[in-house]
Every structure is written in structure tokens, then in C-alpha cells.
Image (cartoon, rainbow, N blue to C red; front, side, top):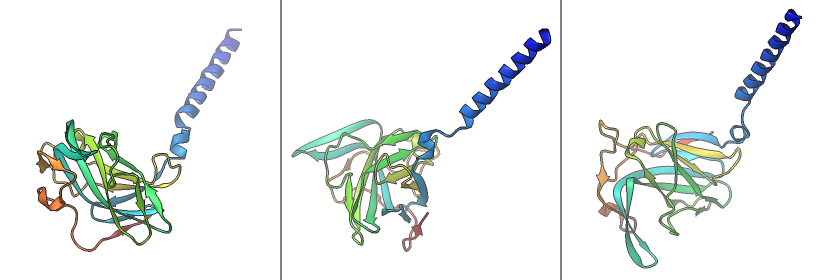
Length: 212
């Protein structure tokens, strides 16, 4: 009797262990249908199925100046404003590029700010084949989430098995503390770029392509 009880307990323990192992190792639906990353770097063109994107520069500022409904506003943040300028174009047919995510070095993700309202240079960006377009992606990020960060660009936020450009911010200069070497006290979204401090980032030379 005692041997039978011990045998039953052993079978029960094995069943529980097997069930737990299957639960831990079985991929979640979100993992099975996650976007397919296409890696690239600043200054290089990345091909993401329905669109091409090239990250031209990233500007960091403590305050963001903008014009909303005819009124000038100065926006502050507890971290830093990160303004990413990209060059976008469609591959085969007209499309939109709507989703941008900042992925920090610890894999924390920050969505685009929603504090700017509608702007023509903000997502969703409508793009056409053969016609390049500059588009902004603006984030509020902690200073310790910049060194080693990546910019994720996709046609839409929830695009199962669609391509997602994953651009390394290797062209951003940082100091010993990991914070950007160049932080503007204020950045004006509506001013000409050359009027607002250093802009040179990323590798020089002809554009290069990264494809899946």
C-alpha cells in the first residue's frame, strides 16, 4: 500500500513538472506573431517590406517649443525630449508609417509622445514610392535610456509578422554618465534645423541599405 502511494505521488509530481515545463517553454501568441525586426544603423537605409527608412539625426532637449492651434507652447518633461528625424519612402505602393517606439538599453520601451497633437511632420506619415519624405518621431525618455538605445519604426503598432525597422542609435555621442553629449536647453519644432545647434550624426558617405 505504501509503495503504491509513493508511486502515485511520483507520477503526480512528474505530471506537474511536465505541465509546468510546457507552460514555461511554449511560446506565447504575442511572440509567435511579433513584428519581424530588420536591423540597421543611423545614416543607413533600412528596408522594412512596405517602406524604407533612414534615421538622419536625433536631437535631445530639455524643453520643446511648438505651435498648437496658433498658440506658442513650451513643453517640459521629467526626462529628455528626443526628436528623431527620418527619411521615409514607400517601396511598391503608397502606404503610411505610423508607429515609432524608443527601446532603451534595458529593453524598456517608450511610445511616441501624445502631447503634441496633430502635426503634418508627425505620424502617421503618408509615403509614396520614389518620393522621399522627412518625418519626425518624438519621445520623452529618461537620460539613462539613451546609450545603447534603438529606434523601432513600423507601419502600424499592431502588425503581426510585419517587418519592423530596428535602428541602433550608434551615432549618438554620449558622455561617461551615458547621457547625450549635446543636450539643447530648448528645441523649436517649427524653426529651420540649422538654426538649432549641432546636427551632424551618423556615418558619412553614400547611403547604404539593410534588407531582411
